[in-house]
Image (cartoon, rainbow, N blue to C red; front, side, top):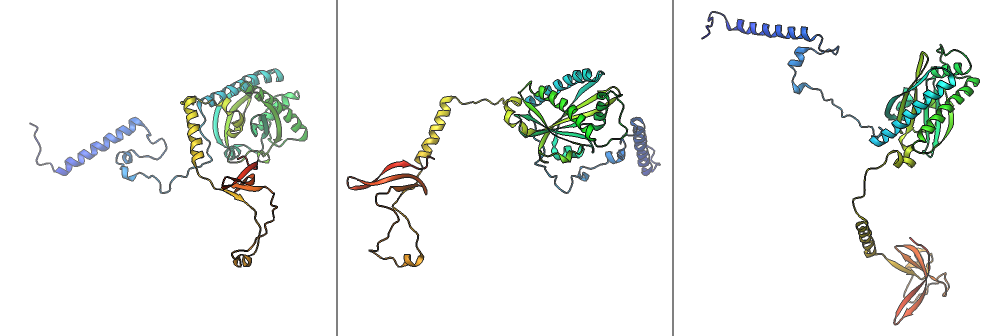
Length: 350
């Protein structure tokens, strides 16, 4: 049995307990280092925090309906195959063309809106609108402007040194840049043609991407990121393609895995049920002898025995209306003791 010193005040025992707890916390902080990672979090606050004190925000978070839709795994794989083929051929082509080691590396794929993509682009830059028929609408190619100047220096026989001042193209430089961008477009068109045959074309080239038009700001883009390394100089290149442009070839890039679960006999039965439902629905059929316009005073003065002159000859065909629309022309006649109408010409086949 442990003896207790009754002469020691209870408050001293509690004080020593608190000191031991504080010492343990200090030791834990010394062992773990700066646990807040520079975020301003205190260990005491974390240990003593209450779930009721969490700040969940006073205003609901807004959902942006212009955010890009999720793309399927097969679609992503096909785009990745295009990007990797472009990177491989670009490395071989520009190494041969520039006669120096050139590396085109695929960096990955991301999604954003066109407005977000424009905000990310530097100004000035080298941006071009490109068409890849039968893809619908243009795509955008962005080539780092500093890297573009290095390419031009090497093509003109100079050294691939970084450009000290980034500026807009001169007229001569614009012509050289157009040819350079055209080569990138041609190689990317060949990469896409591995999946679907396309015809590439350059629509426009600008140093300010806001001068280019053809894509709405809310359009969802899939952006293929590349890095090109030319000797000791490297820079990015991006292909931004609207998801809507893949509409005509979506089944090729994004094959559907959904299969029809009902056989042909069941589908035929469904069509028969729909047809029976339509055939059983009621519709008003009216044979029009004639019509004319008059004023309200004449209508109020009508009485039994009055004759109305119709602007239609007796032998002229009569209009037959179905649900208020002219559908047939017919001739009046008789079947037994009943009046009848004989159909002679269809006006509306719907």
